[in-house]
Length: 99
Image (cartoon, rainbow, N blue to C red; front, top):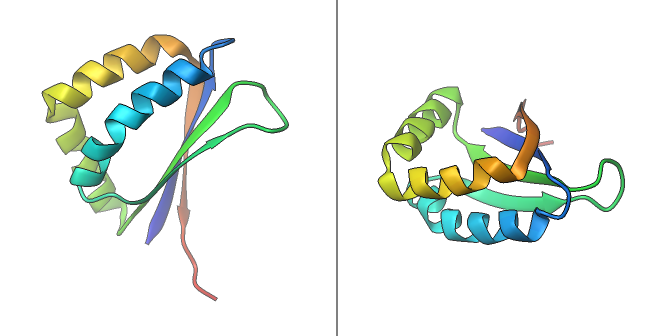
C-alpha cells in the first residue's frame, strides 16, 4: 500500500475556494477506487497549505487512477477551476508500513 500526498501552496485567501472544489471532486476520486482520502490544512508552517492525501495499492494503480481522472470530463472541469488557486505544489509518495 502507498500513501500519496499532493501538497499545494495556495494563493493568499484561496483556501475556502479550494476546499469547495475538493468537496465536489471527492465523489469522483472515490469512484475511481481511491481509499482513505484526507484533506489537511496548515496550522503552522507555510500559510495556505493544503494537502490531499490518498492511499493506493501500488504505483501502477495510482497511475491508472490518474489516467481515469484525466479522462473524466467532470473532473477536468473541476481541475481547471482548482489550478488558478494554486501557487505551487509537490507530490510525495510513501510506502505504508504496518508495525
